[in-house]
Image 1 (cartoon, one colour):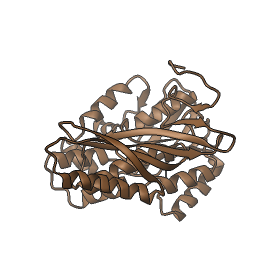
Image 2: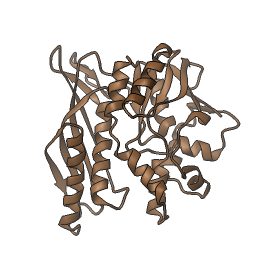
Image 3: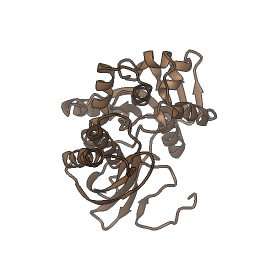
Image 4: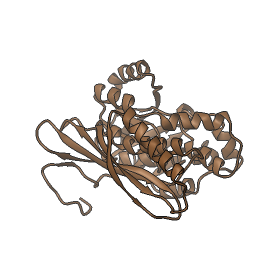
Length: 316
């Protein structure tokens, strides 16, 4: 179990790289536990706080849970004006309230660069948690948000004038994965993860390794934020994108028509990305309809097969 301590009530630990831990309290309630924080990715402090909170709670949604409480995790330099730090915290609190949860405390330290996020506690019914290790051959892969937020926020840091490109990225990062999670659970999804720092290929690779299967991803099917491909063609990409591409070299097979730009896109580290859901073929139409009814655009981006020797196969 990779150093994990076995316990009958620890339903999900860190042995498979799941998005959150799940600890059973009794037959009806299990706790979902996770933490995440990062440095500013947008200029507006309120928006930054709200995005960081949405990103932190996403891990609870990815496992099919409901966030109930959160603790602020903050590192602010002493030189940061009080009004700025207060706006960051206010943005986080507003997003937590939107999720129906509560901020109940937190901890702040002095640091050179601001950082903010949440330690989140959620709940899920034991046995109904959606893990990353239970995808099945024959499943269909559904993604609930477009890709490219890492590229856009990096362009912002580089002083690019982005206009509507930035607005589209901020809108998707601010959107909670709550509705997607509820639809996923209702559809009886076999497995899921949220697409964040390792990019869609990295997170799919983790899910497939844990499940002992192969994920086939179609580049042409992937939803992408406006302007992202053009920014990549201009040489804009986070440093994490290249690290992600290197880390998956031995587990991903790329078809010959997948060029460098497409590979960078699929390794782009996302902030508050969508859910990547592995669902039975017979349930996918119902899932897509349910997502649409909740205002979420679900896109079929690939399928799961028996293990072929690679965790992920990417085609055009």
